[in-house]
Image 1: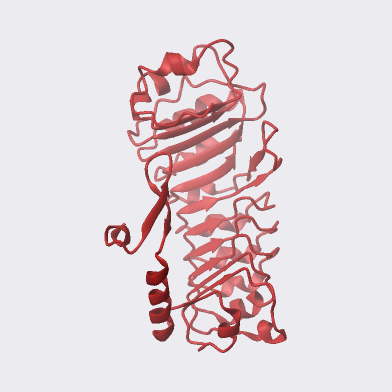
Image 2: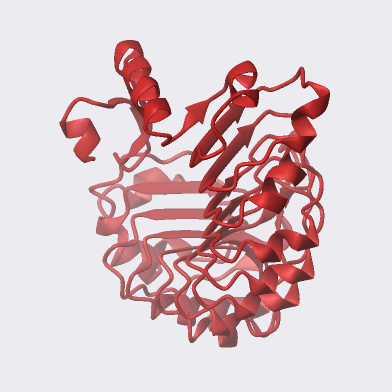
Amino acid sequence: MELIHRNMLQVVDNDELGRVNTCKMHDILRELALSISKVEKFGTVNDFGEIIQMDRDVRRLSAFRWRKMKNDASKMKFLRLRTLMASETIVMCIPSILSESKYLTVLELQDSGVTTLPSSISDLFNLRYIGLRNTGVSLLPDSIEYLINLQTLDVKSTNIRNLPPGIVKLTKLRHVFADRYADEDQSEFRYFVGVEAPKGLSNLEELQTLETVQATKDLAKQLENMMQLRSIWIDNISTTHCAKIFSVLSMMPLLDSLLLAARNEKETLSFQDLKPTSTKLHRLIVRGCWADKTLQCPIFQHHGRNLKYLALSWCHLGGEDPIVFLASHVPNLGTCPI
């Protein structure tokens, strides 16, 4: 935010809650920043020809849309590299970089051609961020359990169905984004599917973001120790899950974003036990058939004044218009896609 206030970055758009979503930098300021960063070996961006000749002491590297690679690309080594961002890029050079960059803290491979991670990734003991969103990765190596400093794992929109059992040993984890598209056209009810909760999930007591996890009979018990959660998305919820899971969610004092999706379009969700103590819950997304008198439940009647974003789908309200009914209970609502 300080860079925005100093006019070094310009806001492009905000999200539905008014938070900054995308920023851009003026062309002149960008060229100046790149020039200084190159001189000080802070980082370099997106010029493969220059990168081949670049000082190997560079600490941050951004590669975007690398397509034509020379044969010596696989031999590139950056011993002092701290951050690697490779978007929409072929991955010939990545194994070499990972094997030599022992000080790497940020690995962002979103939209790249990567399909696997080497087990040797466990050697990157300083790694704090792994981003694999929108890649073809289907399995994380078991050795990921040795990345004891990892804070963020983003495997959203990949082919990963289960997280490695050892992930529960990463007690510094703060953010986990993990789901996959079951229907990319988004025409089916359950077009995205969360991962199964690993046994021992409750060990991650400092976790703040968990998107998306499948509901099970044991999930509520595991969530009882995870009171630092700010955002949690749960799918595959059945009617029998509602009471226990919603009761635990109600106790989370910092919760600000919640997605609840039923197992299928016929499964009924009962919200009678969803009574949030958090006054910060501003974003609520619900997918599934509602039980009778849902609009009279505490989440809408008493907590509605805190909601700023409410998305409803497949709720089967018949002729009942939720907006008409809720209007007086959600005075701060800014967005309500139905």
